[in-house]
Length: 207
Image (cartoon, rainbow, N blue to C red):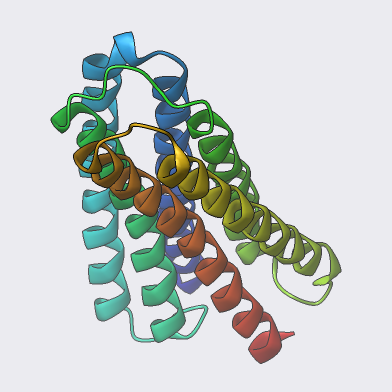
């Protein structure tokens, strides 16, 4: 019975990670075709609602399970950060539509591609948790890769802002709109690194 409860907790975490990954991929599709903005925004909103439902279910399971396979605070942190990735993706997509952005800037798709890479690695790391930590080498390598992608995202974010601020003749309102979009993409990547940090702490506790 306890093993089944453990599997259920891990399955919910994995489902959250998969929803977050799907949302980043949908955002990446949007960056390549603003003509599909309404369609993709609707898809991302549905994923965000699905992610919220999974988060609530997992938090309730944690609260009502006497002994959990991992520390309850760590499970809560992982769940919340996975939900935050989806939330920030939805916020970025929603602002692109709300602000009436008609075409993508050239550095948008590469920035979101790094977010997709970070989330792909994060999803693999989350799905590795139920395998245990007796041989944690491959999982630690995944965490290093997430950190590497996050560093690349930092550089891309700074480059995108510099290009935005230095563009001749651009009006201040347009700068604000695009900066808000970039900020949310970068924060979503930061959340992937937060998840990696939590998993690193878990490995140290249980390896």
